[in-house]
Length: 159
Image (cartoon, rainbow, N blue to C red; front, side, top):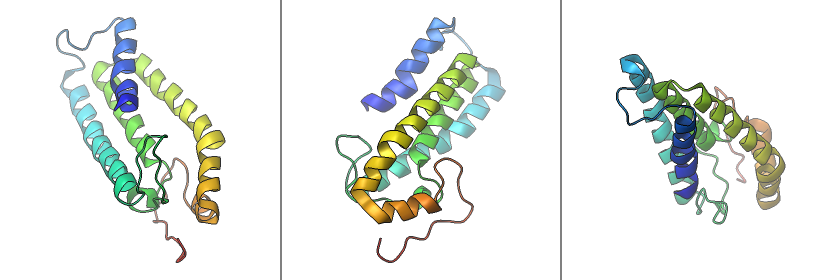
């Protein structure tokens, strides 16, 4: 809970506070902003819960770097995109920026996305290649990092 709490609660609250807003001081955003935020946040939370459950149930690990899955997860949302967990976080930050009417939080989303892209390319993906070998390489070629495929990934029989 430390990482999601930091990324989704503490940093956004700090950014919003430092840029002159405070989310507990009266109505923020209006009905349209709240509606859009809910439309974004509910599926984002459902996607996060689904991906975390897949890591535990199928991957036999957790999203935490110190207890990663021991089996490559290529089902559910992972059949369409390699990083659905981060997608859920990004959509939730955008929901926060919408309800708080905060360009600074949109900036946080861009920075967070950029940092994670660098991390995935230079750290996580090479580590997955070492841990899962050709199974991950096949998956990596077939499934995009960020923009979902319209057709689901079909794992080879050996996966």
